[in-house]
Length: 115
Image 1: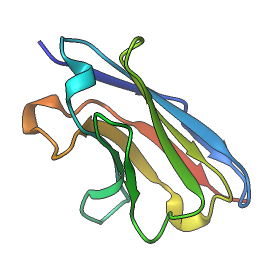
Image 2 (image 1 turned 90 degrees about the vertical axis):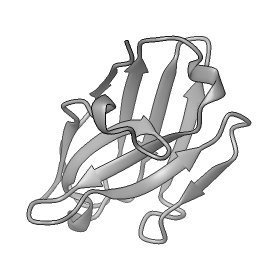
Image 3 (image 1 turned 180 degrees about the vertical axis):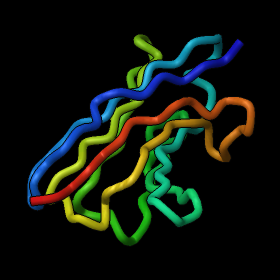
């Protein structure tokens, strides 16, 4: 059974930083491409960043240069370092495989950027 549990969200001022974590259960984590997604109120869920099994990463244009995705295959963990946060980054953030698997969506972690 695969599960993803996200943590690390919170309230931060514009320009601040947060580090999100995602811990995976199940086997073969190291073999799969993973992604961070987010969903803002009234908007569709969007892909923010991806990292493949070789740790090659890609980013949405809106976060490029500010966010960094990383993974630790021993801990079966995925991370998202978010710097220079903007109010438009406010959303619930989720991790999942890339592409996302419907049955694997977790509860997510809320990130709110506001002064």
